[in-house]
Image (tube, rainbow, N blue to C red):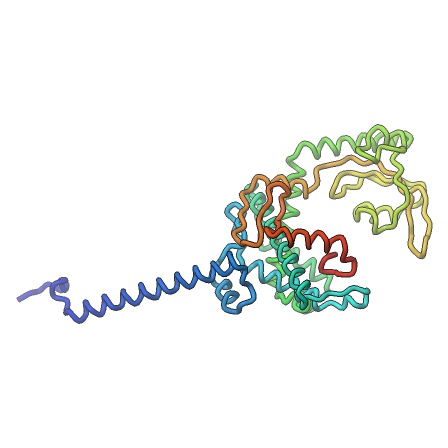
Length: 361
C-alpha cells in the first residue's frame, strides 16, 4: 500500500496539466495585451501630446506616466493635467469682466494659452520637486502636526472648514486633501528649506552684521544719507539712499507693511525681505489721485534670494522631461517649448495681452 500523501508529477491527470498550461497562456496573453496598451497610451502622451481623450486621462490616473523626472522625484502626467484642470476652472469661474479683463480658452488662440499655462504649471511642479528634494537631503520633513497647523491658519482666514472647502471646490475643484498636497505642503517645504539655508549660509550672517552696523551708527545719531553711502548695496547707495515716491503696491510687501504705518521723518528698525535687509526712512507723504504716496530713503544690504537658491539647485538636479512638447533648458533653468513658434507666441502674449488674466497671473 502507498502511504505517500504527495501526488507526484507523473500522477497528475493530463487534463489538469492542460488546464494549467491554458491558464498560464491566458495570463501571459492578458499581460502582453496590457503591456501593449500601457505602452500605446504612453506613446500617445509622450510623442503626440494626447491629453483630451477620456481613455488617456483615465489610464494616466492609474499608470504613473512621468511628465518630468527631477532627481528621484517623479511628476506624473496625471498630476500635471489635474493641476491644469484646476487652473482652467479658476480662470473660467472668475468674473474678470468686472475688472475690464477677459479669458477665453475656447478659440484656437485660447487653446494655445492653455498650453502656455501647462508649461508654467510644469515649471512650478519641477520647482516644488527641487525644493522637496533639497529639503529631504537636509533632513527636513513635514509632520502631520505641521500640515494641520498650516491648514488651521488657512481656516482662520476663511472662517470655517466648510468655507475653506467650498472656496477650494469652487475655485479649483479641490477637496481639503488636494489643497494640502497642492498648496500647503509645497509652501511648508519652501519655508522650512529657506529657514535652514538662512541659518547655514554664512553670507546671510555677514549681511545681517553689515545692516546691524548701519543701524548702530544711526542709533548714535549718524546722518542717514552718510550711512547709506557707506553701507548700502547697489543703486540704493546713490543720493544718500533716496529712492523717490512710491505707492504701497509698488514696494516690497515687507517694506510696504512698515512704511504705511510710519510717521514722516521717522526711520524703521531692520526689515528683512525676500531680497535682503532694509532700514527705511519716510521722508514725506502725500495723496495723489486718491492714492497715498510715500517718499522713501533706504539703506539696503542684499542677500541671495530664495529664487536664486532654487536656480542654483535646479542646475545641480538632473531634470528630464519626456513629453515631446517641452524640454528643460539648462541655460535658462526653465521649461521651454520645443516648438519655436510657441516660444514666440508666449513672448508676444506677455508683451501684448494686458487684458488677459491668464497671461498676467
